[in-house]
Image 1: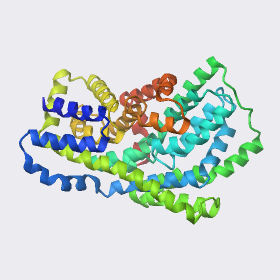
Image 2 (image 1 turned 120 degrees about the horizontal axis):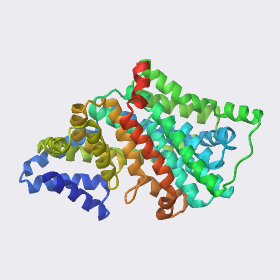
Image 3 (image 1 turned 90 degrees about the vertical axis):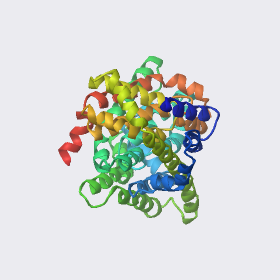
Image 4 (image 1 turned 90 degrees about the horizontal axis):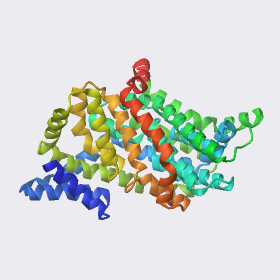
Length: 426
């Protein structure tokens, strides 16, 4: 009953337009007051600080900063040109370039919103100039941005690892195959829609054009190899990997491509600060609410409730997926992960699911939430970039959303998709 009250109150606040971080904290405070435990509020500051001050979480602002530097330093344009030469002649033309560009971009940024705001501006303009409807261009951009947190490095994976103690390096490596499969699934969805509607196709690039565009994008393409390879070999931790990503992007932008000036850095740092504060404020507020849930043994009650419905692992997994997607309709992906990890981790342990596989499943489910109203952050981000209404984006989005759901089910029921590579390399 308490769980229903807490979630109901949280969703009510969000529906009234209260910011997610504030709604999380307010729900926790109200819950303690109604439970007659006012003295627990003295722990508010301590619990919020504790939830957001883990060493692993320091990687978050660094990866966000790396993405901001990419958008400023000319890296985005070079990635787009290479993707254009590589897959522009496929059925769907620039829509396929959109998806492939997001895969390459994700190897340095790790956030979906960063992809949508960075690559999205270039991709949407190129697609609309080539004759694609603005609503389809926006939908493809929103869908392809979900590759960012799946393919390493990934901010949601850093958060999951910080909460559970699961190796972030293992999570990063586990995301490589799902990220590639997700890219292929989205390209197939784009192919089907484009073939039916007769969307324009770009001419095939010559070998010289392909070689030149590849050389122009080679250093950005090598970024994930450097970052993941360094972490896997033990040269640096995930947090230090974030610092390496920032230094790598800064050197490329300032000294190799020479498109970042000293005067650009204050704006880049300010944007990074704003984004980081939003993410970490959500983490801090959710940490206090999570403490209330654990204090009231709500996760234990939910575990008993779930296990009473079924003891069959695949049925429990399906139920977890449905709950995560349902919560994702109303909460931002980071908040979903923080709130549900304490509840579902004991359950997946009981049914024998590997924590790394569960981490990938949570990331995939949170990506679906980013694309579903009423709180789909990617929808609003892409709407702001493109000027297309959210409802129009949603109407065009469903073939790509189906592709994402299929990949999510593959991660859930085919452990090798996420576990084969980390078990082979580590």
